[in-house]
Image 1 (cartoon, one colour):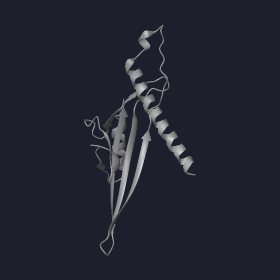
Image 2: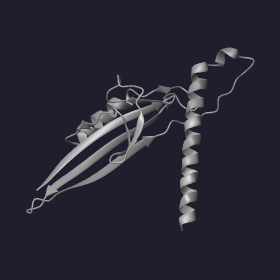
Image 3: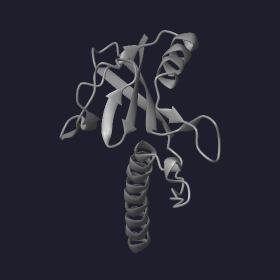
Image 4: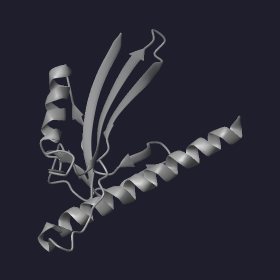
Length: 160
């Protein structure tokens, strides 16, 4: 007999701050690392979902709470990074009483788009400090992600 458990979480990274999109009052969350759990986000809620409809409801709830804004490229641009996590656990017990659990994880990641900010000296009112700070945070995190990917790919090449 196999028992299934499905949970989801949804977080946003906006200007270097992590927020739980399923519990929006839970802000300034911290990334931690544990020997047993691995890397995780402290205080991030996990909601049990019983069917596809429940999972889509959680996804849509979080989508509507994301930071978006108009850019030169489109009217509703993501101004934050987001990660929707779905975890499925299958637990079974043999006739001998041995219990085993298999875990599958699906992480859906939406990265904020980078956009060049320009200052028009002839139109100083076009300069929006909030947008400039957003762009700076987005570019900084995308640059860090690029460095991680480059490091992982060069490590992989050395192992071959």
